[in-house]
Image 1 (cartoon, helix red, strand yellow):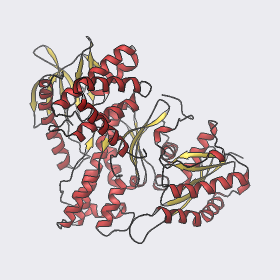
Image 2 (cartoon, helix red, strand yellow):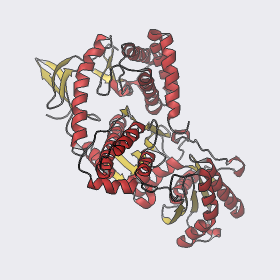
Image 3 (tube, chains in turn green, blue):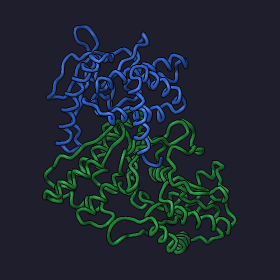
Image 4 (cartoon, chains in turn yellow, green):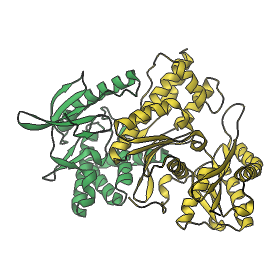
Length: 331
Length: 207
């Protein structure tokens, strides 16, 4: 029987459990998310959701994968970065399972996991990764022995900007899909702050300007269209800067915002111009979910990484570039 | 003509004019971007880069001389600098020469900041070192006038970022060289910019 790893992901609003085998087959990937009727996510409500729903989601993941608790060789969990209460609820479940089953525990960096599951799906070896979600906007590439953040947002994440805009115009969380749908009907472009600094971006000015345009009565479709084109244009530019600077030949798009078709279209254009391969991680593996944690746990385990329960405190501010990537050859 | 290099936003050609090598920096249309945004960016950056290459030289920073600019095609013709990017050289230099070059990189940034100009993309890809170990700054498409303390802090933050991503094994030495060079010209003003750089860094995720 190959190595079987159960991965638990609970860094923010969703809780996921995924089962992945040692050769990289995703056997199951179940999740559930807090969906507030109005407003955003409260960390305490989200962590309660994870504690309440976690056990059932884990059982469901095992059933779908066709494995029993005794078949599990390894428990991986999202150790950070993320919301403290959510991380702690998830870590508690992971520790209990590891102790109960007597199997090793591995702590996984959430951002690194997004990249590794994307590499598994695409077959890419060394991409520039554009990771865009509600909490993150990063352009990451491997250099030396770490995943290094070449560019990121200097203020709010792109998904956060879209969610807040959605809230202003009366859409439910997450607002990305609603904004995308409106944008398809948009025709008139309204100029918005385009803020690129080196390989960094800033979205707070755009949010303020978009709020003002909305209050001035600009049509919602035109507003969404203008916001998407400007925000994604900025991402295209920093991606091009990262490709030109690192000379890498693969671009991987992942995170919740990767579902946006227009963003994929723009980055395909970027990849073509630079002769790079392009892959958008498929929606089930692009959002936050347990399979990415399980797969990265397997990679770390194969490199001899293990975590004692006593040392397994969570790391809410764990940066992508703080972890030695022992399972990849140094570049 | 075959491109000599493909940059992030431009395509570079090397050609000759009056028997001397020159560089054509062309910002092509990007069909994948919204036309309004693309046109605005290409035009303003070409215009800005043309002016800034000259203005930075006025402030004492060595830059390639501009021969002509065509705003319709978004092309700038400038001197070809026979040199290599600091990015590619850093790993091959002695520690003292690397320190010296970083020191002068810091001084070049300081000269611009003293004139209230920021470079906007001060990575080691945009620092050229010629055969006589002279340093040249290029790529001024993101440069800005009327720079505030915040903008200067961002400029320094970008250097810090570039060093930690691209020169992770030499970043401490290189950053020390840059900051010393910067401070050598700006004195106490440098301290203000350094502390702003730190606070900008901490605005990033997970600090």
